Image (tube, rainbow, N blue to C red; front, top):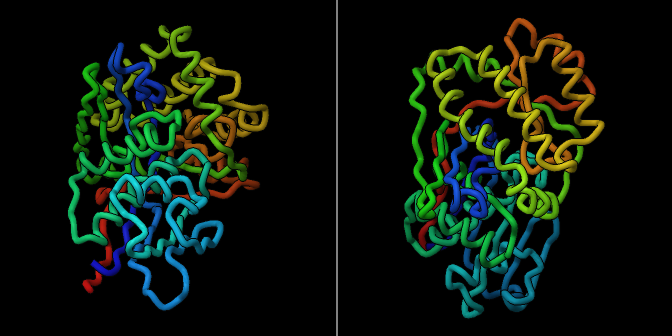
Length: 331
């Protein structure tokens, strides 16, 4: 395979976040309600032609031209090439583009890992199953990069869809699609408002604080985990008002898990949205900054837009494709 392009969705996690860390679910089990969205990470990969005096070229927020994989600065690219068996015998060129900014709570690092592994397999003419893709991305982030990450983002990006993702105590992961009728799904999408707070951060230190505090917050985490089946039932009944209010309850519980999860700025944005008509919401990701999602009846959304007019609004829908190879060119 000469060239391939992968397209991998970002995600919104509604309920159960925190129970997808192995430190938790290998003891207690875990579950999240998660939605892949129609905003994507794109990775183009090809074998580097031998005419340019370099071995590898990697384009992200930097442009790297190097003579060996070991010299690549991007840690996920460097580790991903090694993990998938690439070496310096044949050069590789990789380009990354994203619809949303990195380090902003929408699962961008895991989407990158999933898309990278997918495109590297495609460059060799290999297909990889969704489960194997998710597991390989989890392994890349957790074991090769030594990141403190959960397991939900990689699954959401690999599979796509609106799912309950269960994490079993034996380490297995079970993906259960929520099969909403199209009219209910569209109405749910209409109730969602997503805003970018204009900041980004490296989440590893925040998630490490979170994981270190899991034992002390066992009661809250069990409560948050128990919300997953109830929230799923509310979606099936199209009770978006109760869903939004439960999301508010879940956010209040999550805020109590670590001081770094929220900030004064985030709290002000949240309060302004709720005063304007939002039923509930949350900050996405590990905390501190990034994207926020709110559940808002359509008739109240104009007032919420006005209250948060200083923020960028991002419309979202469910992505059902998961990580996909959208272009291939054979040698």
